[in-house]
Image 1 (cartoon, rainbow, N blue to C red):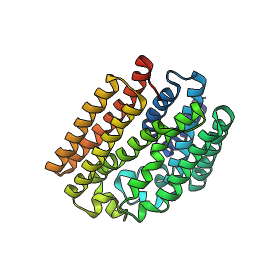
Image 2 (cartoon, helix red, strand yellow):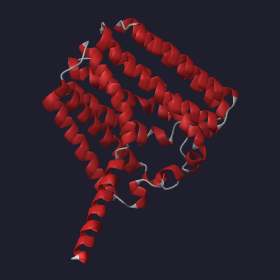
Image 3 (cartoon, helix red, strand yellow):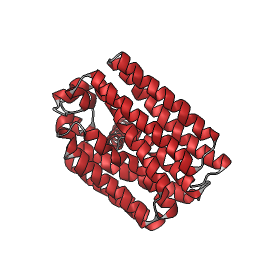
Image 4 (cartoon, rainbow, N blue to C red):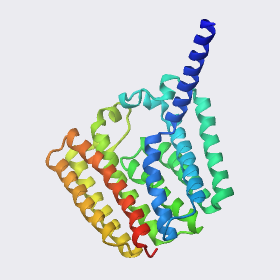
Length: 305
């Protein structure tokens, strides 16, 4: 009896570990940040809170689509992930998941996401979600990541797509407001990711990945990060004008933008990994606060989209 119980417990632990490995393939932390940008875009498009079912299906579809794209990325990067200390614990490196299983899992997620979008949301949202996946896989992962120092700049378009998807889910079309939200995320991505790449520059160099901090000095990287941060703030203020948000969003955009610049200036003055991680951490807070402010602003004061 004890032997039987022990066997069942081991089986349960094995299944739990396998499930956790498949979840890890989807990069859930990245997905969380993507979803923070989806729902506020839906709220602005509606001019208030959209139907709860539509929000849930859109979030579910977006989660599956992003998870599938991230799974394909891990499948493609499994060779260089072995060379980088930061990624040596990933499932395809440790053998917790086989390459074939990961590939099938990625396809299953993408197909399910597209079916969800087309069935319960609309075709445009589904095409945008699948398009973002294809861009992330073929343009970023297979092409730019290993060949260009501008890899994360152009590749960041995939991460900015949720702003478009959220809007399209509500309206079935696109407009200037979601394009501005897309631009905010697009230009936010380089300073955010380069800050992390500064800390792990040795990893990227070992894997022959031409991230900007590998090719130029930290100071030179910080100068470009500062430039992109200025552009992000400009687009955040342009959105205020177009969407007709109130003082609430404007205050968050201005104060958050000033602190974002202050952090990048700190890196410029003291070009080291510690300062870089301060930029990385605050960049997440800044983007989250900006989009949460958008949602609250519309729900409380209304907005002209």
